[in-house]
Length: 249
Length: 355
Image (cartoon, rainbow over all chains, first blue to last red; front, side, top):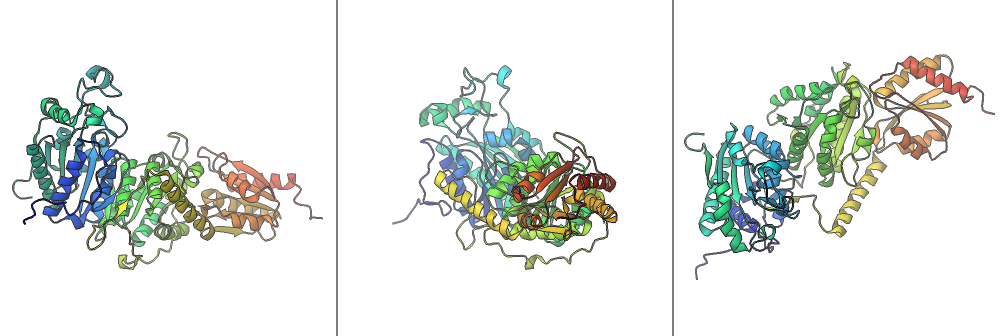
Protein backbone atom coordinates (compact mmCIF):
# COMPACT_ATOMS: atom_id res chain seq x y z
CA UNK A 1 0.00 0.00 0.00
CA UNK A 2 1.33 3.42 -0.87
CA UNK A 3 1.57 5.90 2.01
CA UNK A 4 0.38 9.30 0.84
CA UNK A 5 0.18 11.28 4.10
CA UNK A 6 2.34 11.26 7.22
CA UNK A 7 3.69 13.41 10.00
CA UNK A 8 6.44 15.69 8.65
CA UNK A 9 9.96 14.78 9.75
CA UNK A 10 10.42 18.02 11.70
CA UNK A 11 7.15 17.88 13.66
CA UNK A 12 7.41 16.27 17.10
CA UNK A 13 4.92 13.63 18.19
CA UNK A 14 3.25 16.05 20.60
CA UNK A 15 -0.47 16.84 20.19
CA UNK A 16 -1.02 20.57 19.60
CA UNK A 17 -2.33 22.47 22.62
CA UNK A 18 -3.83 25.25 20.52
CA UNK A 19 -7.56 26.04 20.66
CA UNK A 20 -9.88 24.33 18.15
CA UNK A 21 -9.72 26.19 14.83
CA UNK A 22 -6.51 28.07 15.67
CA UNK A 23 -4.18 28.73 12.74
CA UNK A 24 -0.91 28.07 14.57
CA UNK A 25 -1.04 24.27 14.24
CA UNK A 26 -1.62 24.53 10.48
CA UNK A 27 1.26 27.00 10.10
CA UNK A 28 3.58 24.87 12.28
CA UNK A 29 2.89 21.91 10.03
CA UNK A 30 3.53 23.95 6.88
CA UNK A 31 6.90 25.08 8.26
CA UNK A 32 7.83 21.48 9.08
CA UNK A 33 6.85 20.36 5.57
CA UNK A 34 8.82 23.16 3.91
CA UNK A 35 11.94 22.51 6.04
CA UNK A 36 11.75 18.85 5.02
CA UNK A 37 11.12 19.48 1.34
CA UNK A 38 14.00 21.98 1.14
CA UNK A 39 16.15 19.61 3.25
CA UNK A 40 17.16 22.36 5.67
CA UNK A 41 15.63 21.09 8.94
CA UNK A 42 18.96 20.03 10.41
CA UNK A 43 20.60 23.39 9.73
CA UNK A 44 17.58 25.42 10.88
CA UNK A 45 17.41 27.54 14.02
CA UNK A 46 14.02 29.03 14.93
CA UNK A 47 13.16 31.91 17.25
CA UNK A 48 9.63 31.75 18.71
CA UNK A 49 7.84 34.80 20.15
CA UNK A 50 6.14 35.57 23.43
CA UNK A 51 2.48 34.65 23.07
CA UNK A 52 0.59 31.43 22.23
CA UNK A 53 3.26 30.34 19.74
CA UNK A 54 6.11 30.52 22.25
CA UNK A 55 5.44 26.80 22.59
CA UNK A 56 6.34 26.27 18.91
CA UNK A 57 9.44 24.49 20.23
CA UNK A 58 7.20 21.81 21.72
CA UNK A 59 6.16 20.89 18.17
CA UNK A 60 8.88 21.88 15.71
CA UNK A 61 11.75 19.42 15.94
CA UNK A 62 14.54 21.87 15.11
CA UNK A 63 16.89 23.98 17.29
CA UNK A 64 14.85 26.78 18.88
CA UNK A 65 15.97 29.77 20.96
CA UNK A 66 13.31 31.76 22.77
CA UNK A 67 13.34 35.56 22.59
CA UNK A 68 11.74 38.21 24.77
CA UNK A 69 8.54 39.82 23.48
CA UNK A 70 9.26 41.57 20.17
CA UNK A 71 12.98 40.84 20.14
CA UNK A 72 13.02 37.82 17.81
CA UNK A 73 14.48 39.63 14.77
CA UNK A 74 17.38 40.94 16.91
CA UNK A 75 18.05 37.49 18.36
CA UNK A 76 17.76 35.96 14.88
CA UNK A 77 20.24 38.59 13.64
CA UNK A 78 22.77 37.51 16.29
CA UNK A 79 22.36 33.83 15.37
CA UNK A 80 22.54 34.36 11.60
CA UNK A 81 25.57 36.68 11.71
CA UNK A 82 27.39 34.13 13.88
CA UNK A 83 26.39 31.14 11.74
CA UNK A 84 25.73 32.53 8.24
CA UNK A 85 25.35 29.07 6.66
CA UNK A 86 22.45 28.07 8.92
CA UNK A 87 18.81 28.81 8.12
CA UNK A 88 17.37 31.18 10.72
CA UNK A 89 13.72 32.06 11.05
CA UNK A 90 11.54 33.90 13.55
CA UNK A 91 7.89 33.15 14.22
CA UNK A 92 6.00 36.17 15.51
CA UNK A 93 2.50 37.33 16.31
CA UNK A 94 1.03 40.70 15.38
CA UNK A 95 1.57 42.31 18.78
CA UNK A 96 5.10 40.96 18.91
CA UNK A 97 6.12 42.14 15.45
CA UNK A 98 4.02 45.29 14.91
CA UNK A 99 3.84 46.83 18.41
CA UNK A 100 6.51 46.02 20.98
CA UNK A 101 9.00 44.78 18.37
CA UNK A 102 8.40 47.27 15.55
CA UNK A 103 11.89 48.75 15.81
CA UNK A 104 13.64 45.36 15.74
CA UNK A 105 11.53 44.27 12.75
CA UNK A 106 12.04 47.39 10.63
CA UNK A 107 15.76 47.62 11.30
CA UNK A 108 16.42 43.92 10.69
CA UNK A 109 14.61 44.29 7.37
CA UNK A 110 16.43 47.50 6.53
CA UNK A 111 19.82 45.95 7.27
CA UNK A 112 18.79 43.22 4.87
CA UNK A 113 19.41 40.50 7.44
CA UNK A 114 19.31 37.21 5.58
CA UNK A 115 16.57 35.73 7.77
CA UNK A 116 12.99 34.60 7.26
CA UNK A 117 10.21 36.08 9.36
CA UNK A 118 6.88 34.31 9.74
CA UNK A 119 4.31 36.85 10.85
CA UNK A 120 1.05 35.38 12.10
CA UNK A 121 -1.69 38.02 12.04
CA UNK A 122 -4.84 37.14 13.99
CA UNK A 123 -5.78 40.71 14.86
CA UNK A 124 -5.58 40.35 18.64
CA UNK A 125 -3.35 39.44 21.58
CA UNK A 126 -4.39 35.80 21.82
CA UNK A 127 -2.54 34.50 24.85
CA UNK A 128 -3.38 37.41 27.13
CA UNK A 129 -7.09 37.16 26.41
CA UNK A 130 -7.89 38.97 23.18
CA UNK A 131 -6.89 42.61 23.68
CA UNK A 132 -6.59 45.03 20.75
CA UNK A 133 -3.53 44.39 18.61
CA UNK A 134 -1.92 46.94 16.27
CA UNK A 135 -3.53 44.92 13.45
CA UNK A 136 -7.06 44.84 14.94
CA UNK A 137 -9.36 46.10 12.17
CA UNK A 138 -11.69 49.09 12.61
CA UNK A 139 -14.95 48.31 14.42
CA UNK A 140 -13.60 45.00 15.71
CA UNK A 141 -14.55 44.37 19.34
CA UNK A 142 -11.79 43.21 21.68
CA UNK A 143 -11.45 43.21 25.46
CA UNK A 144 -9.82 46.65 25.26
CA UNK A 145 -11.99 48.07 22.46
CA UNK A 146 -15.51 47.63 23.85
CA UNK A 147 -17.87 48.95 21.21
CA UNK A 148 -15.27 48.32 18.53
CA UNK A 149 -11.97 49.85 17.45
CA UNK A 150 -12.39 53.45 16.43
CA UNK A 151 -9.75 55.30 14.44
CA UNK A 152 -10.36 58.43 16.51
CA UNK A 153 -9.83 56.72 19.86
CA UNK A 154 -7.57 53.76 19.21
CA UNK A 155 -5.74 54.69 16.03
CA UNK A 156 -5.74 52.87 12.73
CA UNK A 157 -4.72 49.28 12.09
CA UNK A 158 -1.11 49.13 10.97
CA UNK A 159 -0.01 47.74 7.60
CA UNK A 160 3.28 46.33 8.78
CA UNK A 161 4.07 44.29 5.68
CA UNK A 162 3.66 47.34 3.45
CA UNK A 163 5.93 49.29 5.82
CA UNK A 164 8.57 46.57 5.70
CA UNK A 165 8.34 46.46 1.93
CA UNK A 166 9.55 50.07 1.79
CA UNK A 167 12.84 49.18 3.50
CA UNK A 168 15.73 48.71 1.10
CA UNK A 169 16.91 45.45 2.67
CA UNK A 170 13.64 43.52 2.31
CA UNK A 171 13.53 41.21 -0.68
CA UNK A 172 10.34 39.19 -0.56
CA UNK A 173 7.13 40.04 1.34
CA UNK A 174 3.86 38.22 0.77
CA UNK A 175 0.55 38.20 2.64
CA UNK A 176 -1.32 34.89 2.66
CA UNK A 177 -3.99 33.17 4.73
CA UNK A 178 -4.88 29.74 6.11
CA UNK A 179 -8.69 29.96 6.04
CA UNK A 180 -9.17 27.47 3.19
CA UNK A 181 -7.29 24.58 1.58
CA UNK A 182 -6.46 26.77 -1.40
CA UNK A 183 -4.99 29.45 0.85
CA UNK A 184 -3.14 26.91 3.00
CA UNK A 185 -1.41 25.63 -0.13
CA UNK A 186 -0.68 29.22 -1.15
CA UNK A 187 0.87 29.88 2.26
CA UNK A 188 3.09 26.82 1.92
CA UNK A 189 4.28 28.05 -1.47
CA UNK A 190 5.06 31.48 0.01
CA UNK A 191 6.96 29.95 2.95
CA UNK A 192 8.98 27.86 0.54
CA UNK A 193 9.83 30.91 -1.50
CA UNK A 194 10.80 32.85 1.63
CA UNK A 195 13.17 30.11 2.84
CA UNK A 196 14.54 29.76 -0.69
CA UNK A 197 15.23 33.46 -0.65
CA UNK A 198 17.39 32.97 2.46
CA UNK A 199 19.13 29.90 1.02
CA UNK A 200 20.11 31.99 -1.99
CA UNK A 201 21.44 34.72 0.34
CA UNK A 202 19.14 37.40 -1.05
CA UNK A 203 18.17 39.12 2.22
CA UNK A 204 15.14 39.71 4.40
CA UNK A 205 12.03 37.66 3.58
CA UNK A 206 8.70 37.73 5.39
CA UNK A 207 5.36 35.96 5.02
CA UNK A 208 2.38 37.53 6.77
CA UNK A 209 -0.25 34.89 7.39
CA UNK A 210 -3.84 35.84 8.26
CA UNK A 211 -4.86 33.35 10.90
CA UNK A 212 -8.08 32.71 12.81
CA UNK A 213 -8.42 33.10 16.59
CA UNK A 214 -11.93 31.62 17.17
CA UNK A 215 -11.60 31.80 20.98
CA UNK A 216 -10.99 35.53 21.15
CA UNK A 217 -13.08 36.38 18.12
CA UNK A 218 -15.92 34.52 19.90
CA UNK A 219 -16.78 32.70 16.69
CA UNK A 220 -16.86 29.05 15.69
CA UNK A 221 -13.86 27.86 13.63
CA UNK A 222 -16.01 27.80 10.48
CA UNK A 223 -17.36 31.32 11.11
CA UNK A 224 -13.78 32.47 11.79
CA UNK A 225 -12.72 31.23 8.35
CA UNK A 226 -15.70 33.05 6.85
CA UNK A 227 -14.72 36.24 8.71
CA UNK A 228 -11.22 36.13 7.22
CA UNK A 229 -12.69 35.71 3.73
CA UNK A 230 -15.33 38.44 4.12
CA UNK A 231 -13.75 41.05 6.41
CA UNK A 232 -10.06 40.55 7.15
CA UNK A 233 -8.89 40.13 3.56
CA UNK A 234 -10.62 43.43 2.75
CA UNK A 235 -8.43 45.23 5.30
CA UNK A 236 -5.36 43.10 4.55
CA UNK A 237 -5.48 42.06 0.86
CA UNK A 238 -3.74 38.80 0.02
CA UNK A 239 -0.93 39.54 -2.37
CA UNK A 240 2.77 39.56 -3.09
CA UNK A 241 3.74 42.92 -1.61
CA UNK A 242 7.36 42.89 -2.73
CA UNK A 243 9.41 40.46 -4.76
CA UNK A 244 12.98 41.19 -5.79
CA UNK A 245 13.85 37.53 -6.28
CA UNK A 246 13.52 37.63 -10.03
CA UNK A 247 16.88 37.67 -11.74
CA UNK A 248 20.38 37.66 -10.32
CA UNK A 249 20.79 38.24 -6.63
CA UNK B 1 46.28 53.08 25.49
CA UNK B 2 42.82 54.47 26.20
CA UNK B 3 40.73 52.42 28.68
CA UNK B 4 37.83 51.71 26.33
CA UNK B 5 40.31 50.62 23.63
CA UNK B 6 42.05 48.31 26.10
CA UNK B 7 38.75 46.55 26.81
CA UNK B 8 37.83 46.32 23.13
CA UNK B 9 41.23 45.07 21.93
CA UNK B 10 41.46 42.57 24.79
CA UNK B 11 37.96 41.31 23.99
CA UNK B 12 39.02 40.63 20.38
CA UNK B 13 42.13 38.85 21.66
CA UNK B 14 39.92 36.82 24.04
CA UNK B 15 38.01 35.53 21.02
CA UNK B 16 35.04 37.90 21.10
CA UNK B 17 33.59 37.77 17.59
CA UNK B 18 30.30 39.55 18.07
CA UNK B 19 29.74 43.07 19.31
CA UNK B 20 26.51 45.09 19.14
CA UNK B 21 26.08 48.50 20.70
CA UNK B 22 24.33 51.84 20.57
CA UNK B 23 25.96 55.27 20.94
CA UNK B 24 26.00 56.74 24.44
CA UNK B 25 28.63 58.82 26.19
CA UNK B 26 31.04 58.12 27.87
CA UNK B 27 31.87 54.82 26.16
CA UNK B 28 31.51 55.51 22.43
CA UNK B 29 35.20 54.86 21.78
CA UNK B 30 34.67 51.22 22.71
CA UNK B 31 32.10 50.67 19.95
CA UNK B 32 34.14 52.75 17.51
CA UNK B 33 37.23 50.63 18.16
CA UNK B 34 35.19 47.43 17.77
CA UNK B 35 33.80 48.56 14.40
CA UNK B 36 37.32 48.64 12.98
CA UNK B 37 38.75 45.70 14.90
CA UNK B 38 35.98 43.27 13.89
CA UNK B 39 36.64 44.08 10.22
CA UNK B 40 40.16 42.73 10.65
CA UNK B 41 38.92 39.38 11.92
CA UNK B 42 37.76 36.65 9.54
CA UNK B 43 34.41 35.94 11.11
CA UNK B 44 33.73 38.86 13.47
CA UNK B 45 30.53 40.92 13.46
CA UNK B 46 30.04 44.51 14.55
CA UNK B 47 26.52 45.91 14.49
CA UNK B 48 25.47 49.41 15.45
CA UNK B 49 22.02 48.44 16.67
CA UNK B 50 18.81 50.47 16.48
CA UNK B 51 18.55 50.49 20.28
CA UNK B 52 20.20 49.26 23.46
CA UNK B 53 17.46 46.65 23.66
CA UNK B 54 18.18 45.35 20.15
CA UNK B 55 21.92 45.33 20.89
CA UNK B 56 21.63 43.09 23.94
CA UNK B 57 19.19 40.80 22.12
CA UNK B 58 21.61 40.45 19.21
CA UNK B 59 24.20 39.44 21.79
CA UNK B 60 21.72 36.86 23.09
CA UNK B 61 21.40 35.42 19.58
CA UNK B 62 25.16 35.35 19.01
CA UNK B 63 25.64 33.68 22.38
CA UNK B 64 22.99 31.06 21.54
CA UNK B 65 24.95 30.38 18.36
CA UNK B 66 28.16 29.88 20.34
CA UNK B 67 30.06 33.14 19.83
CA UNK B 68 31.91 35.01 22.54
CA UNK B 69 29.72 38.12 22.49
CA UNK B 70 29.79 41.55 24.07
CA UNK B 71 27.89 44.80 24.35
CA UNK B 72 28.72 48.03 26.14
CA UNK B 73 26.84 51.09 27.26
CA UNK B 74 26.47 53.65 30.01
CA UNK B 75 23.94 53.87 32.83
CA UNK B 76 20.67 54.84 31.02
CA UNK B 77 21.51 52.37 28.25
CA UNK B 78 22.25 49.65 30.77
CA UNK B 79 18.78 50.20 32.25
CA UNK B 80 17.35 49.43 28.81
CA UNK B 81 19.44 46.28 28.53
CA UNK B 82 18.14 44.84 31.80
CA UNK B 83 15.38 42.81 30.11
CA UNK B 84 18.03 41.10 28.01
CA UNK B 85 20.34 40.58 30.99
CA UNK B 86 17.50 38.84 32.84
CA UNK B 87 17.01 36.57 29.80
CA UNK B 88 20.78 35.88 29.60
CA UNK B 89 20.72 34.81 33.26
CA UNK B 90 17.55 32.72 32.87
CA UNK B 91 18.74 31.01 29.70
CA UNK B 92 22.25 30.56 31.14
CA UNK B 93 23.93 32.30 28.22
CA UNK B 94 27.46 33.71 28.49
CA UNK B 95 27.94 37.37 27.55
CA UNK B 96 30.06 40.32 28.63
CA UNK B 97 28.42 43.69 29.30
CA UNK B 98 30.49 46.82 29.96
CA UNK B 99 28.88 49.68 31.90
CA UNK B 100 30.73 53.00 31.94
CA UNK B 101 28.71 54.47 34.82
CA UNK B 102 27.63 58.10 34.59
CA UNK B 103 25.76 60.53 36.81
CA UNK B 104 22.12 59.73 37.45
CA UNK B 105 19.29 58.92 38.04
CA UNK B 106 17.55 59.81 34.79
CA UNK B 107 19.70 61.33 32.10
CA UNK B 108 22.05 62.73 34.75
CA UNK B 109 25.40 63.68 33.26
CA UNK B 110 28.42 62.02 31.72
CA UNK B 111 30.80 62.44 34.67
CA UNK B 112 32.22 59.43 36.55
CA UNK B 113 30.04 57.95 39.31
CA UNK B 114 29.36 54.63 41.01
CA UNK B 115 25.59 54.98 41.25
CA UNK B 116 24.84 51.71 39.43
CA UNK B 117 26.26 49.42 42.13
CA UNK B 118 22.83 48.22 43.23
CA UNK B 119 21.66 47.74 39.65
CA UNK B 120 24.74 45.69 38.78
CA UNK B 121 25.04 43.57 41.90
CA UNK B 122 21.37 42.95 42.66
CA UNK B 123 20.49 41.63 39.22
CA UNK B 124 19.04 44.78 37.73
CA UNK B 125 16.35 43.11 35.67
CA UNK B 126 13.37 41.09 36.84
CA UNK B 127 13.58 37.74 38.57
CA UNK B 128 15.73 35.83 41.02
CA UNK B 129 19.24 36.01 39.58
CA UNK B 130 22.70 37.51 39.98
CA UNK B 131 25.37 38.66 37.57
CA UNK B 132 29.11 38.47 38.08
CA UNK B 133 30.38 42.05 38.44
CA UNK B 134 34.05 42.97 37.94
CA UNK B 135 35.47 46.32 39.03
CA UNK B 136 38.85 47.19 37.47
CA UNK B 137 40.68 50.28 38.69
CA UNK B 138 43.63 50.68 36.30
CA UNK B 139 44.63 50.13 32.69
CA UNK B 140 46.31 46.77 33.15
CA UNK B 141 43.31 45.49 35.09
CA UNK B 142 40.97 46.50 32.26
CA UNK B 143 42.86 43.98 30.12
CA UNK B 144 43.24 41.30 32.78
CA UNK B 145 39.62 41.43 33.92
CA UNK B 146 38.25 41.54 30.35
CA UNK B 147 39.97 38.22 29.62
CA UNK B 148 38.62 36.85 32.89
CA UNK B 149 35.14 38.18 32.12
CA UNK B 150 34.90 36.04 28.97
CA UNK B 151 36.31 33.01 30.77
CA UNK B 152 33.89 33.38 33.71
CA UNK B 153 30.97 33.95 31.33
CA UNK B 154 31.71 30.71 29.47
CA UNK B 155 32.63 28.70 32.56
CA UNK B 156 29.56 29.65 34.58
CA UNK B 157 27.28 30.26 31.57
CA UNK B 158 26.34 33.64 32.98
CA UNK B 159 26.36 37.29 31.98
CA UNK B 160 29.38 39.16 33.37
CA UNK B 161 29.35 42.92 33.91
CA UNK B 162 32.50 45.02 33.79
CA UNK B 163 31.83 48.18 35.77
CA UNK B 164 33.92 51.21 34.87
CA UNK B 165 33.29 54.95 34.50
CA UNK B 166 34.15 57.64 31.99
CA UNK B 167 37.43 58.45 33.71
CA UNK B 168 38.70 54.89 33.42
CA UNK B 169 37.39 54.68 29.87
CA UNK B 170 39.18 57.85 28.75
CA UNK B 171 42.42 57.57 30.71
CA UNK B 172 45.49 56.48 28.77
CA UNK B 173 47.89 54.12 30.54
CA UNK B 174 50.57 51.70 29.40
CA UNK B 175 49.16 48.17 29.20
CA UNK B 176 50.58 44.77 28.38
CA UNK B 177 47.96 43.13 26.19
CA UNK B 178 47.45 39.35 26.25
CA UNK B 179 48.40 37.21 23.24
CA UNK B 180 45.40 36.60 20.94
CA UNK B 181 43.60 33.31 21.60
CA UNK B 182 42.86 30.96 18.72
CA UNK B 183 39.11 30.37 18.38
CA UNK B 184 39.82 26.64 18.11
CA UNK B 185 41.35 26.74 21.60
CA UNK B 186 38.23 28.13 23.23
CA UNK B 187 36.22 25.70 25.38
CA UNK B 188 33.77 23.51 23.42
CA UNK B 189 30.11 24.32 24.04
CA UNK B 190 27.77 21.35 23.82
CA UNK B 191 24.58 23.37 24.23
CA UNK B 192 24.57 25.87 21.35
CA UNK B 193 21.95 26.23 18.63
CA UNK B 194 23.67 25.43 15.34
CA UNK B 195 21.16 23.11 13.72
CA UNK B 196 20.20 19.61 14.88
CA UNK B 197 22.42 17.66 12.51
CA UNK B 198 23.03 14.10 13.72
CA UNK B 199 21.81 15.01 17.20
CA UNK B 200 18.45 15.68 18.91
CA UNK B 201 17.12 19.22 18.54
CA UNK B 202 17.85 21.69 21.36
CA UNK B 203 15.72 24.36 22.98
CA UNK B 204 17.05 27.41 24.83
CA UNK B 205 14.12 28.81 26.76
CA UNK B 206 13.15 30.68 29.89
CA UNK B 207 9.39 30.10 29.85
CA UNK B 208 8.71 27.45 32.47
CA UNK B 209 4.96 27.41 33.07
CA UNK B 210 4.95 24.68 35.72
CA UNK B 211 5.77 26.42 39.06
CA UNK B 212 7.41 23.25 40.38
CA UNK B 213 9.82 23.20 37.42
CA UNK B 214 10.41 26.97 37.60
CA UNK B 215 11.25 26.54 41.28
CA UNK B 216 13.69 23.78 40.35
CA UNK B 217 15.27 26.09 37.73
CA UNK B 218 15.57 28.88 40.32
CA UNK B 219 17.28 26.56 42.80
CA UNK B 220 19.60 25.33 40.06
CA UNK B 221 20.61 28.95 39.34
CA UNK B 222 20.93 29.56 43.09
CA UNK B 223 23.33 26.65 43.47
CA UNK B 224 25.40 28.06 40.61
CA UNK B 225 25.49 31.46 42.34
CA UNK B 226 26.54 29.73 45.57
CA UNK B 227 29.45 28.13 43.71
CA UNK B 228 30.42 31.46 42.18
CA UNK B 229 30.30 33.10 45.62
CA UNK B 230 32.62 30.42 46.97
CA UNK B 231 35.05 30.38 44.06
CA UNK B 232 35.23 33.91 42.73
CA UNK B 233 35.66 36.51 45.47
CA UNK B 234 38.57 38.79 44.56
CA UNK B 235 39.91 41.68 46.65
CA UNK B 236 43.22 43.47 46.93
CA UNK B 237 44.67 44.88 50.13
CA UNK B 238 47.20 47.71 50.47
CA UNK B 239 49.04 48.50 53.72
CA UNK B 240 46.46 46.73 55.87
CA UNK B 241 48.95 44.74 58.00
CA UNK B 242 49.35 47.37 60.72
CA UNK B 243 46.24 49.41 59.85
CA UNK B 244 43.92 50.74 62.50
CA UNK B 245 41.58 52.14 59.89
CA UNK B 246 40.86 50.48 56.55
CA UNK B 247 39.29 52.35 53.66
CA UNK B 248 37.07 50.21 51.41
CA UNK B 249 36.62 51.47 47.85
CA UNK B 250 36.51 50.11 44.30
CA UNK B 251 37.30 51.38 40.81
CA UNK B 252 38.16 55.05 40.43
CA UNK B 253 37.26 55.72 44.08
CA UNK B 254 39.89 53.17 45.15
CA UNK B 255 42.60 54.94 43.16
CA UNK B 256 41.70 58.23 44.82
CA UNK B 257 41.63 56.53 48.21
CA UNK B 258 45.05 55.00 47.60
CA UNK B 259 46.46 58.45 46.90
CA UNK B 260 44.88 59.70 50.12
CA UNK B 261 46.33 56.80 52.12
CA UNK B 262 49.84 57.54 50.81
CA UNK B 263 49.42 61.12 52.06
CA UNK B 264 48.20 60.18 55.57
CA UNK B 265 50.88 57.48 55.90
CA UNK B 266 53.41 60.29 55.48
CA UNK B 267 52.12 61.88 58.67
CA UNK B 268 52.16 58.52 60.44
CA UNK B 269 48.52 57.43 60.33
CA UNK B 270 48.13 53.65 60.13
CA UNK B 271 45.58 53.42 57.35
CA UNK B 272 45.15 50.70 54.70
CA UNK B 273 42.97 50.00 51.67
CA UNK B 274 40.73 47.06 50.88
CA UNK B 275 39.66 47.08 47.25
CA UNK B 276 37.01 44.65 45.95
CA UNK B 277 37.68 43.53 42.35
CA UNK B 278 34.50 41.43 42.34
CA UNK B 279 31.47 43.40 43.50
CA UNK B 280 29.34 40.31 43.08
CA UNK B 281 30.25 37.99 44.54
CA UNK B 282 31.20 40.49 47.22
CA UNK B 283 34.57 39.62 48.83
CA UNK B 284 33.06 38.73 52.21
CA UNK B 285 36.00 36.52 53.15
CA UNK B 286 38.50 39.38 52.74
CA UNK B 287 36.23 41.65 54.81
CA UNK B 288 35.94 39.06 57.57
CA UNK B 289 39.70 38.54 57.58
CA UNK B 290 40.35 42.29 57.82
CA UNK B 291 37.81 42.74 60.62
CA UNK B 292 39.77 40.35 62.86
CA UNK B 293 42.31 43.12 63.48
CA UNK B 294 40.63 46.29 62.28
CA UNK B 295 37.76 47.84 64.19
CA UNK B 296 37.22 50.95 62.07
CA UNK B 297 36.31 50.95 58.39
CA UNK B 298 35.67 53.91 56.12
CA UNK B 299 33.72 53.23 52.95
CA UNK B 300 34.28 55.73 50.14
CA UNK B 301 31.99 55.59 47.12
CA UNK B 302 31.12 57.96 44.30
CA UNK B 303 27.46 57.60 45.27
CA UNK B 304 25.28 58.25 48.32
CA UNK B 305 26.19 54.82 49.65
CA UNK B 306 25.42 51.48 48.04
CA UNK B 307 28.37 49.10 48.54
CA UNK B 308 28.39 50.22 52.19
CA UNK B 309 25.34 47.97 52.72
CA UNK B 310 27.31 44.90 51.59
CA UNK B 311 30.14 45.87 53.93
CA UNK B 312 27.78 46.16 56.90
CA UNK B 313 26.32 42.75 55.99
CA UNK B 314 29.80 41.24 55.71
CA UNK B 315 31.04 42.70 59.00
CA UNK B 316 27.92 41.80 61.00
CA UNK B 317 28.54 44.70 63.45
CA UNK B 318 31.97 43.37 64.44
CA UNK B 319 33.56 46.69 63.43
CA UNK B 320 32.47 50.30 63.04
CA UNK B 321 31.54 51.27 59.49
CA UNK B 322 31.79 54.93 58.46
CA UNK B 323 30.82 56.32 55.09
CA UNK B 324 31.91 59.13 52.80
CA UNK B 325 30.28 59.60 49.43
CA UNK B 326 30.20 62.12 46.59
CA UNK B 327 27.46 61.37 44.02
CA UNK B 328 26.47 63.17 40.84
CA UNK B 329 29.78 63.00 39.03
CA UNK B 330 31.97 64.69 41.63
CA UNK B 331 35.47 63.23 41.56
CA UNK B 332 37.17 63.91 44.88
CA UNK B 333 40.86 64.70 45.07
CA UNK B 334 43.16 62.52 47.18
CA UNK B 335 43.63 65.58 49.43
CA UNK B 336 39.90 65.78 50.15
CA UNK B 337 39.77 62.09 51.06
CA UNK B 338 42.98 62.45 53.12
CA UNK B 339 41.25 65.17 55.19
CA UNK B 340 38.21 62.91 55.73
CA UNK B 341 40.50 60.06 56.80
CA UNK B 342 42.58 62.23 59.11
CA UNK B 343 39.57 63.76 60.77
CA UNK B 344 37.96 60.34 61.34
CA UNK B 345 41.28 58.88 62.58
CA UNK B 346 41.63 61.43 65.37
CA UNK B 347 37.91 61.55 66.17
CA UNK B 348 37.99 57.81 66.86
CA UNK B 349 41.20 58.13 68.90
CA UNK B 350 43.14 55.77 66.65
CA UNK B 351 46.44 57.56 67.20
CA UNK B 352 46.61 56.14 70.73
CA UNK B 353 48.34 52.80 71.22
CA UNK B 354 45.76 50.10 71.98
CA UNK B 355 45.91 49.45 75.72
